[in-house]
Image (cartoon, rainbow, N blue to C red; front, side, top):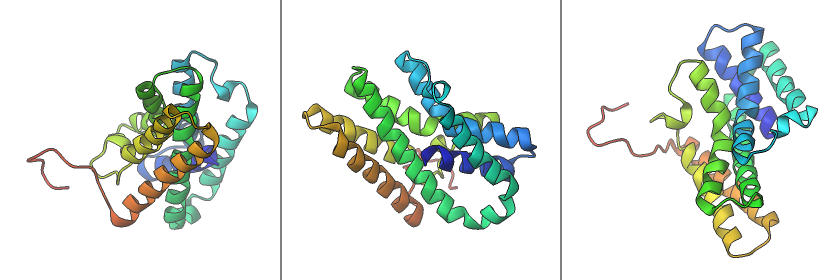
Length: 198
């Protein structure tokens, strides 16, 4: 679900913000969907899951294909797609943090890898589109902060010795809820003092 949602969102972002052909849509959507997981696995020192299971790429390409052929219709569904994007972010964040803990990484490193899993693909997409990554933008409506909170919750509770199953579910729900509330109420992280208004 997370890969499909990110592929859809990444492809639609590419279509809306740049003049891209089918190759650009497929490439940028796929990078958005699987980029964060690839970075995480490389940092963990293992072969990325994407290259061990064909379903990752097929799911990403299915999302890209849908976006390519139905881009006009899907632009009217921007709010549901943002909900799917929030769900994808939440799932990737807890998966990344949990996997880092399983590999024996420390708490801070696990939080960082959780966040990278969630935001890495979108960051690569934005760099390829020559724009400030969404996660760093002053108008992102809290993208990185929910990711850090979700990953931080998973890591913090894991330190107490509880099993990972329900921790991941609650961590994902926490990240998802904060992201959705930020979108609804247009919350943003603080800007530097004296920064010009948006």
